[in-house]
Image (cartoon, rainbow, N blue to C red; front, top):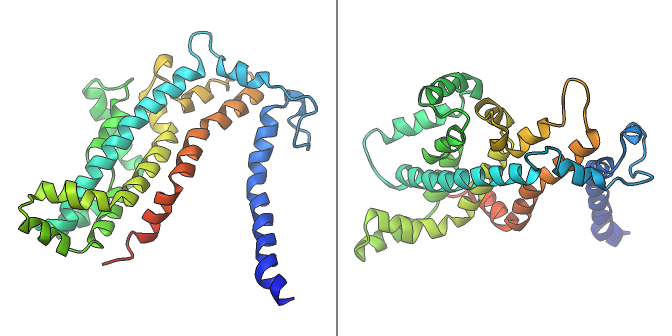
Length: 276
């Protein structure tokens, strides 16, 4: 009985909980293969799967397929992740290792910006980008990531950097390393788990930023996946089968990235803020 409680029962509970969590995904897959008439039925799997929901959804527009929307989104994500990771690491290194005047005040201001809701800054940002002529382009969606990458990511990396022994910096200085040499040769390799965490969060959050994409992009040729999904909904009808099929494909990149980078993601979250 004791063996059952200590070994078997936890596995049973984990399996049951996993099935409960994965059930919506199973329903999602089944619903993406259903005809419109079966969507309201309580069955999980359709009687006659409509695999053409995927092909029809992929080629829903005569001029632009979902392959174009995926390519647009991935290109935008590449700029967001690269810019966000590099600049967040640089700014965090300054706050975490360098001594300069009013460092505490500037860091406090940085943390205060985390408390501002997006609705407060979205209007002045739109006016600014519109005056520069950057609307209907990816610049408003990518450029902010090249200016620090976001207060949350800077704070996360600062906590990670502060946990690294300063003796490493002193030893590098004795060997003649400059400030930038210490950053690229010492700090950057040691904060790789935190950088992967920042990259994953940046990718997922910007991928899901439907409001920003809707606000700045108006040309169909520049649509992202989120805006492409919106094309299945009009004032007269909703192509539910195709919408569910393409929405299922739209979550695959985030799921795959999280799956393959899970080791670094868990390590970055587990060790950030627990040292120093």
